[in-house]
Image (tube, rainbow, N blue to C red):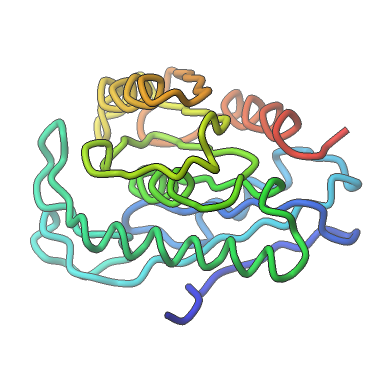
Length: 221
């Protein structure tokens, strides 16, 4: 499987850690590119940011319109019926990016997987099933689409997980995010959950909280 096309933002110093960050439905890797300077991470943190582009596929809930998507969404019910096979393929493609970072000298323990909306659902699957320990998992305005089918790998038991959600989200209702949080806790993950008075987006306060979390899970002084 060829590597996903992606954007890379390189630090000024030799890379010490990597963040692989997945966009949401209909967006692309440029969507979260502007967030990097807003995190105000120190230069010595030497974090490489990788923003993959999802393939363009027909999306059932959008009348079959072809758009960037990590998987098809078949209906928009509270539990969301998704194309599981496509989601798993996307998770495997993300794991290939993790493996490529390891080949480039970044230890798996210094790699974070992050994702917004359906990108978050893919990041959850990819992180919890990865066979080597990761630094953490960040899910934004997302849901645990594979909670009933996933077979987590013991290498990432207790993985630090941060979930953020808008309390007024009309696209992925906050109750869906909170449900995923509860499922992760039941599985034994060290998860934390925060809400913000926003819709299906991110805000400055959220970005500041994400930056603090990166400082906790990555080798950042």
